[in-house]
Length: 133
Image (cartoon, rainbow, N blue to C red; front, side):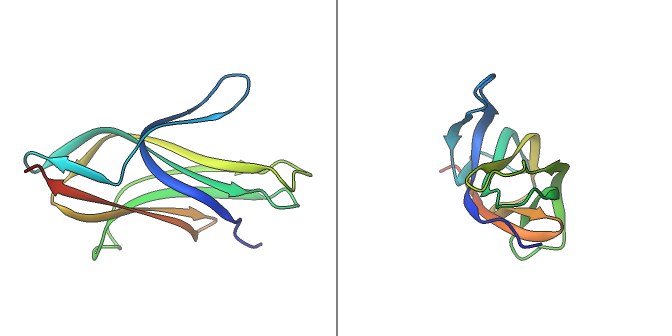
């Protein structure tokens, strides 16, 4: 099974699907979080990754992990879900959307979210925690 083609991946303040139409709504895309002091707690954020479905329906275990650069083996937060892509939808897309709340940060620096599909890397979304000057 090959990994689906990534269309986009992002971090934002909020993401949700419109009832009925199932349209993706993304609010407040960002790549930097500014903190006054450490440790810091970010109230909420969402991670969204959008992929092409491919020709055949597939089952996936999706996982989104947050790690700090240079400390990749230490997973700071993570979420998992299972899903199946729809049949005969060669031009359709699917998305992974995870909303996190109260994310702790112990230090400034570079971080990223990894999106894994069936344990294989599918997307990497970098962001930074910076001091508020």
